[in-house]
Each structure stands twice: as structure tokens, then as C-alpha cells.
Length: 553
Image (tube, rainbow, N blue to C red):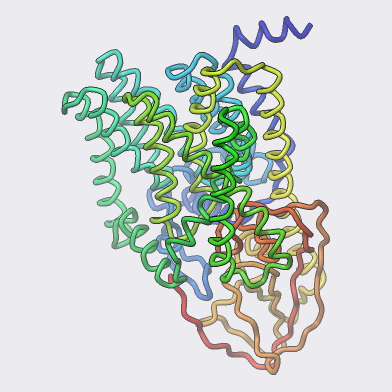
């Protein structure tokens, strides 16, 4: 029976990978909207009403109301896809997550197709891509990351096909896919220099292939002109300015950010770390290198952790930090080792893909986060599959490493799902307990808490313009963004709404050092430790006014 299933999978790899992807994500289709999901849903609702003006509305997202064009740091293609999906499935979580299975499947199959050009076992590269924590968590959202990744891997696959066959049509298709990637997420623009570098490495000169890259360059110009006519500024350049201002506002140290990016690389691509014993065969050299790197990272961690004063068990978090940072070093070293061994155009492509993504995450982006690490996962998966072919590795050993990575990945996405469910439940309980006809129910905070509070009829506080009255009620969530504590003299604490969470792993909690969506919360993409309950404190105003704080927006 098992042999028959293997034969069927070998004959129909695309359908097999699609089925495995669906089965992996099926348990998380009911995941509530959380973190930046609401921004994409609200923009999609705007598109339903005004298709040519995706960001033509205001949103309270940072102490006061802003135009959506200033709040969002992503282009709108994913929002258009959401709007289309909502027309079929409605605006419920299950329907929209169901629609987002398609980009996840496309990304996994694209990784398989791309890997066929680099290794003899592309199915391993596809499965490693799927069963990494960052891929499953990102695929369980309705944000733009996996859509961009799907366009990215297919763009690279068509590019390599065109370069090897010397046909312009696949190159032109690649140029279109690059354009779609960059209007899904601005990081897609990095494909232009990446593919240009591969073209030069492959042909050693400019040729007709370079014309294909004019397609995404033209798309950038059109997008800039379109958004400038709508919102008074080209949104791609505006996103770059925001990253620069946010870096200054949060005083991000590039050295510390690079160390945190190492831990995020190792943790987000944890499955690659589990394969490390099979990839590095010189035991003595490996042990010595790991020992030296660990000592260095222990000292580096001392500087990194001065910023994270809320962590409850800093020693335990430092242990996790050093472990995943070592994994991140292993991943970067793998890309460098492949380039050293082959030094061909394909190896340059993979190395620049991995190292370029890491440098963007560590140095250019204003915060380290899992979503920025995601693009390097297919390249790492291909490097692993390629390197395993150099050694006589038993299938059982590879299966054990993949199973370990898959198990951890499912635990991580399950923890992120529990986090989202707890936030929604807190919002529902606050509304059912404290919403009264005679008083306005306000709230601070954003993310999923804001989405569900507004669904229940509560209003976000605009500290500049909100009509706050004596006796009004305000809910303040725990560990959220853009929170401003009240002066105790201006409020009475009415109570606290608490929702307990199970498990021993978290993806967003400053107490455990987990900051998957932003390293401002912690130096790890996920952390093992005590998972604190989600809660909201509810106050009644004794004074109606609050000063406006500074904000990088």
C-alpha cells in the first residue's frame, strides 16, 4: 500500500504537494484576524466600494486617525485578491483563509519547479519550504507575504528557463511575475537586482535578457505615478521614507539588529537547523566552530538583551537566542559554502537570494520580523536538498529531520492561532460586559483587538479628536501596540477581562521574548516559556482629555 502511494505521488507531484499543503493549513482556517490582517481586510472592503482607490479612507492606527495611504506599508494587490475572495466566500475568516490556500499551494509547487533546476530531489526542497515555522504562520494570515513569495519563486523559475533556453518569452513572463511580486509586497523589487546579477553571472554581458527587467521597472513607474495622483506621494518611496524615520524613532542598533536577525533566521527556518547535522560532516571542525560562535553570541546577547527589560526569564531566553542564532549562522554559511564549491550562476543566485534577504531584514528594514525572513526559505530549502546529494544520506535520516521541523512548525502556527483566538475572545468579552447604551465604549490598541472591538461597535480613541466624556469606558489590551497608560488620577479601574492560553510557546509576548511580527517585542520569532493570559483592563474616565504623544507616523 505504501509503495503504491509513493508511486502515485511520484507520478503526480504537483497534486501531491497541493494536498499536503492543504492538509497542513486546514486546521487553521478559522484563525481570527490578527496583527496587520485588519489593514488588508479594511482595504479590501474599500476596494469593493471604490475599486480604483484602495487606500482612500482614514484609519485610527497610532494614537490618532491617519489616511490609510500613510498607515499601510504594503502595495494593494493582496487587498484586491481579498476583495475578489470576499465576493465568493464572504468576509468571514474561514472563507478568506480558504482563498489564501491558493497562494500557499502556488508557492510550494513553485519551489518544487524551481528546485528541479538545482537538484535531483526537488520534492524535499518543496516539503522543507512548506514545513518551516515562518511559512506556515505566514500562510495562516491574510497578509501579502505568501502571495509575494509565490510570484517570487515562479518569477525565478521562468527566468532560469529563459536564460537556459535563450528564449525571450519565459524571460518576459518572469518580468511580469516580478511586477506582480512588487505590487504584492515592496520587497519584491529586490528581484530586479537579483535577476540582473544572475544574468550577468550567466552570460558575462548585457543582452536581450536585460529587456525583460524593464517590465517591472515600468511597473514601478506606473505604480508611483498612480499612487502619487491618488495620495500625493508615490507609496513605494513613501514606504522607504517611513522605514528610515521609524529606524531613527526606535533607535535601532544595526549591530543588535543583525544579531536578532540571526536568531530570527534560525528560528523562522528551524527545519533547516534540524538538517544541520546531515549537512556539516567534519565533526571536529564543526564542534570547534559552534563553540567559538556560541561564546561570541553569548557576549553579543548581553548587549542585545539590555533593550528587553520585560523578559521574565532572561537566562532561558538567552539560551534559546544563542541556539537559533547558531542556526542562523549555519544557514548563511550553507549559502556561502555552496557558492565556494560551485561558483556558477545558479550558486550566485541562491547565495545572493539568501544573503540579500538577511541584509535587508537586519540592516534596511526598521524592525526584524518573520515576514521579512520568509523570502529566503525556498532558497535555503533548495540548498539543503542540493547539499544532501553530496553525501550518502539515508532517507530515514532525512525524514526524521523533516518530521522534527514539521512538528515544531505546526506547534508554532498553533500557538500563533491560539494568540489570535485569545485576542478575539477578550474583545468579545469586553464588549458583552461593558457596552452600555448610556456610555461610549472606547479602546486603545490595534491589530486583531481593534478589528473585533469595532465589529462589536466600540470606537478607537483618537487622542486628538475623540469626544471623550466623563463616565466613558475605555478598554486597554495587554501587550498591544500604540498603548498609552492613563494617569491613575483620571480613571477608575472597573475590572480586567482575562482569557487564559494553553501551551508552552508563544509568538508575540514581551514577557517571553517572542516577537514574530516585530522584534520590538522580543529577540526571538517564537519562545518557549510560560504563556501569559491575554487580558484587557477596563477603565472609566474621570477626566475627558489626554495629551497626544509623539509617533513615528
